[in-house]
Length: 192
Image (cartoon, rainbow, N blue to C red; front, side, top):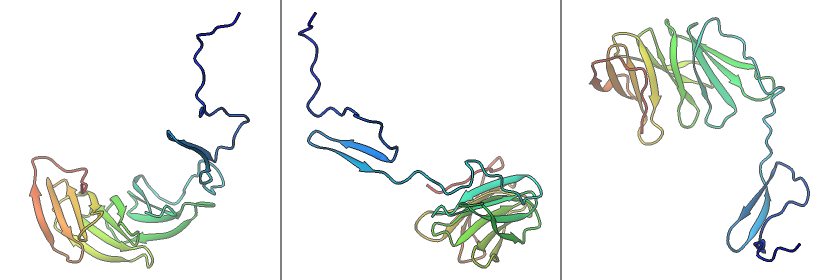
């Protein structure tokens, strides 16, 4: 029995002849189709899940370096750890200086510095090469819950805390540039 009204396949339809490697990507438009190799999907980890040991208490914040080769973590133990993301995921550096828990941290856009907020009512700007705090920012009257650096434009950071304020800082100066008051505490801040 022959079915004459069956729809014919297009001339450019892709039909796999054999099982392909996962590193190949098929791209097609109206006029052409191309099979290209995609980047290898490996991370150089010794295992798909790695346990990073070193903190002596709860971890409150983790951030990846902009280039993806490092990760920073902070927490209740008042320490900032820098980890290598590849291989054995070993600890590269431990930075100390806050007298309270480090509630949040973020790398700046070029990855040379880390911004931190703490329950000691201060913010910190850290150099990841030397492991030293470059500046200590004071202005909040209670716990500082969040910090975020500007992704572009001037060297700014914002912070929010339990004192119900959101503060804007120029990282080249130690004084707060602007303060915005709210009726509740701030637990998150971000530049748009």
